[in-house]
Image (cartoon, rainbow, N blue to C red; front, side, top):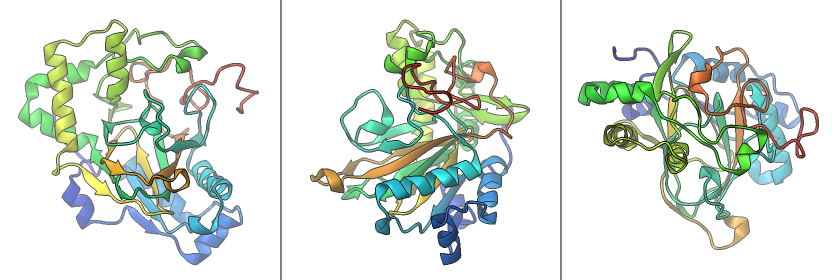
Length: 316
């Protein structure tokens, strides 16, 4: 086992020193997006940076305050379509997710408060900020390759458990498409896809699998705790205070993400609200079955297959 190398290996200070992963939309670009034209050259830069660069991008300045939620969602969907293929985020067939506290336990994006560092089970996740929290709620991102290197240096004895991986399971509602109760294979936290470093970690699904009959050994638990501690530490975790109109895109093979605790507004229409996209990237090497937690997908090799009663052809 050797340390990972390349532009996707970075620490928080590296992102602060080099802001080339940030894009401020020009008025002409905003006008193009509002007109339904999404073939912007700088979206090509985002796509390249996600795959071959640091693995993340921040696109700022979409004037969401002058749009309704439907228009903002349409523009965000168009941008997502220019980058990849949007897929369903649950058995409901939702291609646009709403990240806000509705008290629906068991999913990261429907509850408030802090979120542990994790990765979503698709190639790219996108967030568009519509409303900020009253206080807190910063997005946290970390390079999974840098976390890998730190674990390798600090606790090389734990790497074999992280390379072997863990069993996963989904929520009961999301198993409606026919996924097994618990994955028959272990999904590695650290591995490679087509010879390139790749990672995957969704702790809530590992805990659910443990409840369903896939217990963790003390060493496996210690390995997961080491990853969580290092990924959330100030040396590796970069905090982004997303403003309304900011769009964040993350490569889920390279970037761990989480969220700081926050205080919400009491009024429902003022609560923290993000729109979320799950994107598959057809030009990327596909994940091998051993690095996938879902047995069936929506389309493009990813996403959660909607219930047959929900899906109509290829659309929810």
